[in-house]
Each structure stands twice: as structure tokens, then as C-alpha cells.
Length: 58
Image (tube, rainbow, N blue to C red; front, side, top):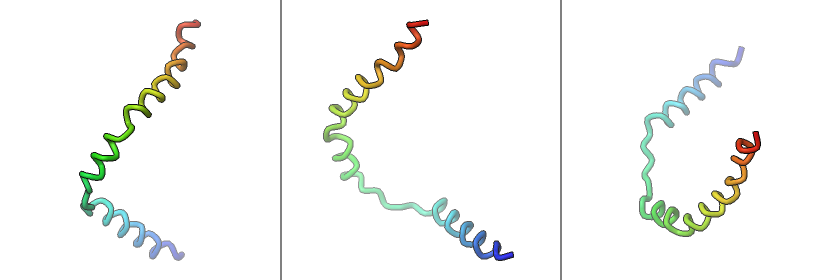
């Protein structure tokens, strides 16, 4: 029976998330994306390169 308040709160939170526009710190985002991302990406590519080998084995 107590579902009404919980649903109303969920609806309120969902509506706030949907219609809110949080401020984005683009300078911080650019710093995060530009520092070390190339090094991390190359390591990830090497790690996943072996994943496609199973296709060649068939």
C-alpha cells in the first residue's frame, strides 16, 4: 500500500534528471581527454587485438 510516495519520489527525481542542465566544465574535460589518452588507448588496442583470433581459427 505504501507505493504512492515512493513512486512520486522516483518520478520527481527522474523528471529533475531529465530536465536539468548541469554545467559542464569543458576545460577540465579537455584536459582529461588530452592527457595520457593516447597511451591508454594503444594499450587497450593491443589487449583486444587477440580477441579476434578465434575467427581465424575456424
